[in-house]
Length: 447
Image (cartoon, rainbow, N blue to C red; front, side, top):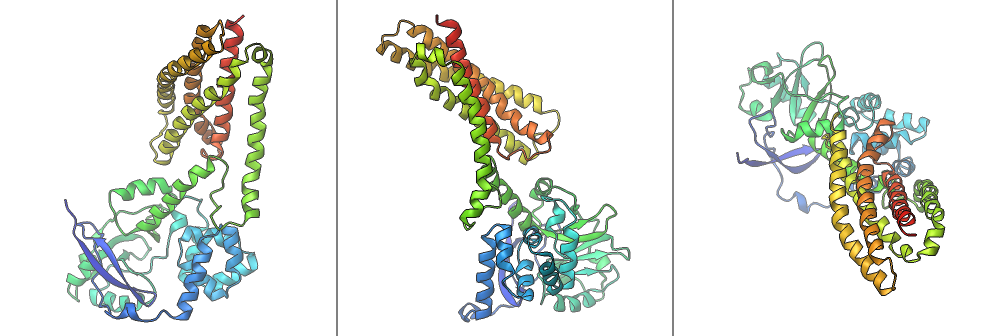
């Protein structure tokens, strides 16, 4: 069904801003509009506000350790304020890099509810919903009247952005959610229990970021309650925060595949970038020696049939691309939760079949290229060399497809990040297989 959108002007941090939210029949109902000032955009930006914006921008564009070094240069109250305005998981990453004494000072300067939430979030693993939680501010009892809740909201909206009212019982268990529309349409004497949505959908703090993203895709709520196993409300997480965190993880995969840490940004100092990248290059050099050893093993064959050296990069390049295609599909399936237990074998079989088909068709083209080149060189074994290229290309693409699917799955079983340096191991295996197959077949078939 088509969705209508209302523009809501809500006060946050003593500023007004326009927020577009979908009007749905769930509890994602927009809050009533607050009056705005038409000439507010013409007001000059205060110097303090400009300084805070510049400081926040400088911190956000750095890796956590560099951001922490910049954060400690600011007063405790400003540092706490800057951290409270960013993604909670990002704030915890930066806080973990701050020296412990200064960290305690910054925590002490933060609002009590924010400080408690940070301490609680730190107990949960990375890439979990628990790391993204914000304090649940507007929490009321079921017997609270609309008039009493409205009076309290007038005070709460001056220090926080309120989307919903959360209704909990005496044991802090979440029993309902009240949308602002229901508050607007309800009478002052009604209780929240009469207008709330009972047993609302909620996330759990242990839930992975991927699982939470899939759940939120079908709901599109601006905020979600987070409850523990007993149903106790432990915080809230905003839909925008979930998608921002997931988008960052996806963007980090491309770098992780070649040994670039996800902490590295454009503004990362060159020395930090060197420390992040160099160990992986050393590992890549070590694995490259394996491919060089394979070529060295068939040195006499290359000396006897020099034309083989021309086609070694062709075999390595094609098999490497085949493996990278399989690797990309496998990592995407892992990220989206599609690669469930039991599907690994089918994925490997599929990539082997696709690799065989691609290898055969590419092998025909490469074989024709070898045939023409060998004839130009007046090589008497031109036809046999073309067949060897075709066969080697097909076999190497099959094995490369299998490797591209298996490398991330093996890394995951070993407890490592499936994306970390996958391409380094994949490139090594494809180079060894393609060159070894090509030179091995030439050694056996050409006398």
